[in-house]
Structure formats: structure tokens, C-alpha cells
Length: 281
Image (cartoon, rainbow, N blue to C red):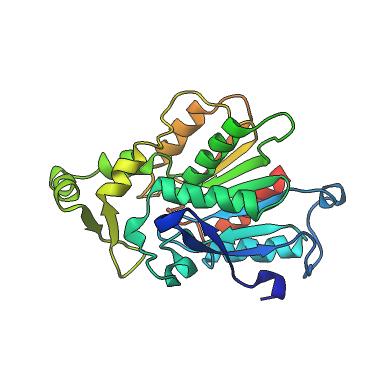
């Protein structure tokens, strides 16, 4: 890892809610490791890439690392980070995953976007990262002015888990699990991706209701690419179809992977992801 890619930290939040967020940033044209496969006209002023991983994932995951290699080969700026309670942001005192909420992780996403990334960005999000990419874009749109636009040049999402706390957690949970979350404050959901179960807290569910996108038509103001596996057991393919129906104005493309599951980390899946990002560049 080059000097420019050493893990750094950004302090987010105020008072007792301050926490350091670990991030990696790669400047534009930094140490190109191979011939670019982007058109020459696109190399001079292309957007940077901001990666947003999923729930319980981290910035050193397979997809995030593949994207780091590709952006370096093509001389593109690239930013990735670990939400509080995730990856290398877990090493800080008091950094508990159980304290995480959509608002908390969105605050960190906004802070990294504003203070670490520079210039136009294509925001690439996987699962919960896709949800945060949409919330980030909506938040930046609300604050944008003619002299200070939002800087989101495009969105690429892998199985976006939008409104996940309500649609994919609460509504799909049996009554007994809902009661446990409400009365005990947490339920530990077994995971096929980890030996440790995922804690679903009452705070996560209640906060999620303050961050719902819903299906009210909304123009993200930039092109949107969605990739989704038909065999996804965690975020149904139909969830992306509903999202497409609610996005207006900008071009929106949904690419189906017939034999794909949730993670879409196989070589052919990664190739498809990079192809969709390149299409926006």
C-alpha cells in the first residue's frame, strides 16, 4: 500500500458522539499500474469513485479491493472508509457495532464525501451502501445551490437495500423476533456470511423510520446503474424493480444477473460492476 493509501482517520460527530472513522484515499493519476481501458477523452477530468460497503462489511473486502486495483490502473481518484463499528473503525475505544444507526452511518458518509473526496464523484454502493448512496444524494440535493452543486455525477448500486430496516428487517421478521427487539432492545440474527450473528437493535429500527425513502417519485439528478442477482435471498430482485419505478428524470438502468446471489463477488460479477462504472465515466 502506497503512502497515499495509508489508513487515515476523520473525526465525525460532536461531544460524546465523536468517533474517528478510518478511511483510505487514492488521488487521481496516482501510481498507475497498467494501461488504462478508459477512452483518452475520459482520462483528463473523470469523476472520482466513492465506495460504500454493506452492513457488517468493510473497506478491505473483495469488491472494494478490486475497485481499488481498477481505479489505480486507470488513474482515478478513489475513496473508501469503514463506518463506525465496522472494519478498522472498530479498533477505536467505544466503537460498538450495536450503536450503529442509519443516521449515524449517513453522517459519516456525508463527512467523508465533503471532507475527503474532491470534485465530482460516482458513488458506488453495495447492499446497505446502495441505500446510503441514495440518502447521501438526497441530502446533498437538498443543500445544493447553483454555485455549489451536489458533486454526485452518478450512482452504481449492487442489490441496493433501500429502506432496509423497515422493508427487509422489521416487516420480514416474525412476531416473536419483533417482540424481542422491542422488549430486549436487540435480536441476534444468524448470518451465512459470518460466524458471528448480526445484532438488530431497537435503535436501528426506530432510527431507520426517520430515513425512509419510500416509493414517492424522486429524481436523483444523475444516471443510476443497478446490478442485482435473481437468486438474492437477502434483498429480493423485486426490491430493485420497485426502486426503479420510483426514480424519475435521470436515466436508470437495472441489470439482472440470472444466477447471481447477494454478494456478487465472482470474477464475472466484478467485471460487470467495473463495466457499469466505466459506462458512467
